[in-house]
Image (cartoon, rainbow, N blue to C red; front, top):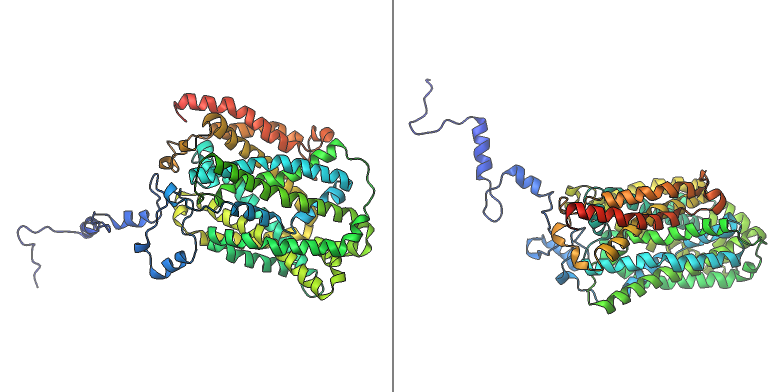
Length: 527
C-alpha cells in the first residue's frame, strides 16, 4: 500500500498542531475562546477586586439547598454593601460573651493566686483594670467589619500590604489555634473528672473538638445562632457551681500585698486574653448593615461588654478558686489529677447526680470558644496563597482539626506552663498588630472607611508595601524582648518591672508607625 500525499490545499498537522487547534477551539461558558490550561487556572484565581456575589442559578441543587439552610458560602472576598443586611447587632454581644463565658477562664484566673501569689483582692483589681483597658482596641476594630465588608486580616492588607501581611496572618492563625487548643484541654479535663479512672483527658479533648467542628463548619449564621443561646446553660452552670462550693471559697490563702512586678506580669496575661481578639472581631460583623455613627457606637458597646463582662466575672472566680485550692484538701487532690475540671467536680459534689450533669455543661462551655477560633483560622488559611481563596472553608477546618487535637493532647501533659507561655506571648504580637491597624485608621485614613477600596483588596501593587507596619513592629521588639518575663526567659528590664512586653509592643509600635507610614505614603504618593 502506498502512502498518499496530502490533497492540495490541505494542511499537514503534527501532534503539536492538533494540540494547538484544540486549545484554540476551546471556549468559555460565555462563548469566548479559552484554553484548557487557562480554564483550569481560572478555577484557582480570584480576579483583581473580585467581591462576593451570589449565583444561585449556577449552583448544584444540593449545594443551593445547603446555602438556603444557612451554610455560609463566602470566604475572604469583600462583602458589598447590598449584601450587608444583618440588623441584629446584639448578636455581636452574644458571640463574644458566649465565647468567653467558658471554663477556659477559670484556670487563667487561678494563675493570679496560684501562679503569681497575689491575694484575691489584688488579683481582682488587676483583672478589672486590665480588662477595662484591653477590651477597647478589639471593640473599636470590630466596627471596621461592618463599615468595610472586609475580614479582619483582609483589612490588615491596607497597612501590612498584600504579601507582608502573611506574618501577622500566621501569628493570628497560631494564636486562634492555641486558644482552641487551651479550651479543648480544659474541656477534656472537665469531662475526665467525671470518671478519671476510665475516661482520659485525651478522650475529653477529642469530644469537645468534634462538637465544635460541626458548628464552625456551617459558618457565620451557625456560629452566631449557637453563641446566641448557649450562654444561658453555661451561666446557670457557673451559678450552680458557686452555690454548691461557695463556702469553700472563703478559705483564701494569705498573701503579701502585690508588687508592681506581679501586677504587670499578670496584667500581661489578661491583655493577651483580650487584645488578641483584634485579629478576629471583624469576621463576625462583615454582614451587618452600616447605618451611620449611632450604629458604630452600638457595635462598639456590644462588643466591649461581650468581652469585658465574662472576662472579669470568670477570672475573678478563677482567682478565688485558686486561692482556696491549697486550703481545701479534696480540691487540691482533684486539681493534681484532672486540673480545673476536677476542682469544679468537687465543688458540685454536694449536688449528687445533678452535679455531674452540671459538670458536663461546664465542659461543653468551651465549645463557643473553639468554634469561633476554628472559623477564623479557616479564613486565615484562605489568605495564605492566592489559589486558597477558591478553596472552601470546609477543607481548612479539617486541616485545623488535624493539627489541633494532637497538639492539645501534648499541651495537657504540661498544662500550667503551657497556659502561661501561650497567654503571655500572644499579647506581644497582638499589641503590635492592633496598634498598627488603629493608628492607620485614626491618623492616616481619618476614620474614612471608604478608603478601604474593594477594588484593590487583592492587588499587591496598589496596596501599601507594608514596610512601615512591619518595621514599626520590629522596632518595638527591641523593647519588648528585654521587657518579657517568661518561665524560660526574663529580660533585664522585666527583672525590675515585671512583664511589660505588651505595653511596649502597643505603645512603641503606634509611635514608630507614625513617621514610618508618613514616609511610605510620601514615597508612594498615595495611601
